[in-house]
Length: 93
Image (cartoon, rainbow, N blue to C red; front, side, top):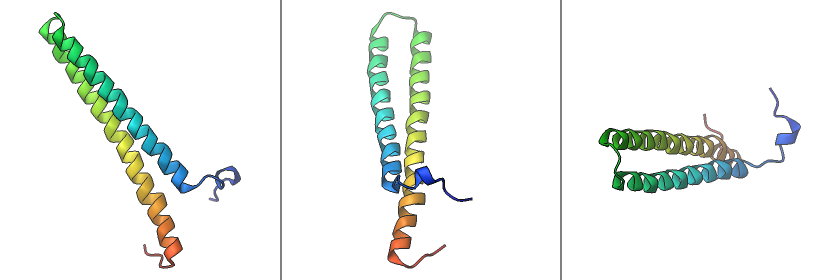
């Protein structure tokens, strides 16, 4: 299957930079959520609510960061290393 014509002008570096920016945004959002979690722990709420909020922030935030980093790593391995192998002239599988 051939690559669509409209995608040929998009470089591999641009695609990988997009995934890297998404990873940074996920890290910032999780950092903000952790600061919010500190505020929840300092409030006078029931302990089970605090534990539930902490579990939610840590699990969902961890999965978000891990997923974004996975996409970035896959992009760099699949697109950028493939490009380097083609430019070096020694295509290895």
